[in-house]
Amino acid sequence: MSFDKSLNQIKGVMLNAYPDSIGYKLSDTVEMLNLPELKDAFSLFYVLPTFFNSDLDRGFSVIDYGINKDLVSQEDIKELNALGIELKFDIVLNHLSVASPQFKDLLKNGEASKYKDFFINWNTFWKAHGEMNEDGLVIPKKAYFEKLFMRKPGLPILNVIFPDGSEQPYWNTFYQKVIYNPITSADLISIEGFPNDKAIVLTEHINKQISTIDTLKELDVLEFEHYKNDIVNILNKNRSYLGQMDVNAKSPLVWEFYETTLKQLKAYGCSILRLDAFAYLHKAIGESNFFNVPGTWDYLSRIKEIADRNQLTLLPEIHAEYGSNLHDAVASRGYHIYDFFFPGLIIHTIENSTNVALLKWANEILANDYHAINMLGCHDGIPVLDLKGKEIDGKFNDGLLDDDEIDSLMDLIIERGGKVKNLYGPDGKKISYYQVNATFFSALGEDSKKMLLARVIQLFMPGIPQVWYLDLFEGKNDYDAVARAGKGGHKEINRTTLSMSEIHSGLKKPSVLKQLELIRLRNTHKAFDGELTIQSKNESEFAFNWKYHDAFAELKVDLKSTIFEVTHS
Image (cartoon, rainbow, N blue to C red; front, side, top):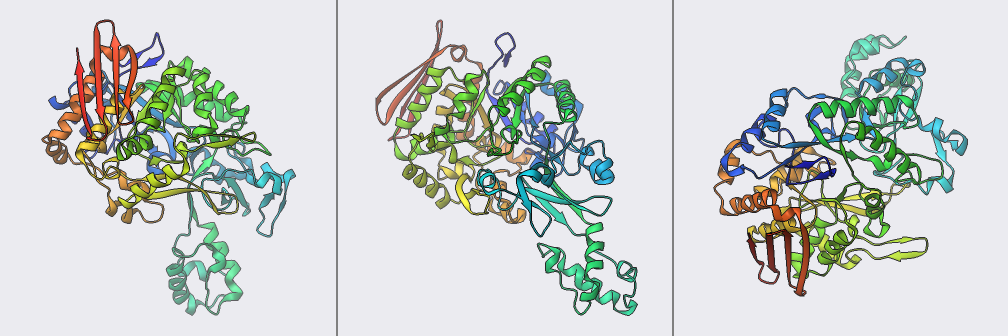
């Protein structure tokens, strides 16, 4: 049984994939799970949000939470239920797509929209706390501006055109893009006084530029500068957008939306709900607008009330330095936590033949009774920021690794083909690395022996093991996918779709079958319902021993030889 509702406790091993990670749609994953080699391997399935209607960021820009019928059917959900597999979904708390019904209504009706306050007008938010610049944007006072935590260079806004022709800036923490659509010669002819015989030539000249320029200030209109304002107005009127627009959690309509959405997800069979980007939801003047307190806790409590009514277990997703102690703060309030420390720790452990940092963290989980979900690879990158220390109130809290160890870890993964993702300050300058994008197999030097060792340690760690589909089949860095995705496409390095023929070929590899054997053990053996004790002979040898009444399962590891032994009742 994967989900003990009486204990509000998640159990078993969790598969993690997009609906189209395997084959062409979710039914192909269901077909894989029905194969004899996969029998009893998984009790849980974290289906990424292309399950829903979305338009970018591979699902994390949600249009609405209806089923994406191109990839998913109700029959798929029924078959997963028949297999005894509980589902985990995302709700993206902080934002919705520009193409959501709510934001489309705002674009259509402007100030008259029912959803005027559903999103955050940047100028309205900062109006009394900054000065307007020449571009019509309110720049917060320096003391406030310097505190802002950014996920990308520049101001976190997307300018949109209202029906009255005004340009309005809306808060946009994550991805955004303005698309200037091609004009026609008829558009230019409609400008009073424009010479008709020049329309075709200028139209072609403009259309060649619009996909390459960053702003319309850069637009070259040849000798027709006198008409540039009219041309810019035409381009603005017909422009379209992509973007993940921050919602305004002070709006009652937002909470009505959350209430409806959680009920909808429960109807799909959801038992576990991951709160994506929840730490950005609460915004306040003079705060960093990342995990503001106490506001973030207040919002989390409100979400939990809705989740409890729908019998959903919450998993708040947060990336922060170990030294910030946010993981402990979240866990101490009774929430499950993501073990974002484990992926980097396990690479460090294996490559340096030292168990010190890993066992420190494992013992902390046990001592504090954390309910964690861990992983090797995932749809995102391998976290590195999370391993760092941090200064809090003048005191420096150590990280799980020191800066030199983290730099060494990053250098190794990058040397093996990984791509770096950074964080930025309000001035657009890099302030910190964030994660490295690579498949876990490539990060380990594409060594099957190391991959198997990483897997078995994961399966014996305290917490729920989450298995990225590509790790299971020893997926390698996909550089072609990164090139196809273009700027910002680094995450595609670890999102290769596997065909059903590749699945069947993979299931002939002894290392893949051994992973599945160990996964099945972790998913079904009673010992893992019990208590874990950890022993360490020296820095390179250690043992994990799970025991429940007469049932036991033990793992012995020698890091220097990368040899392990599993025994069980």
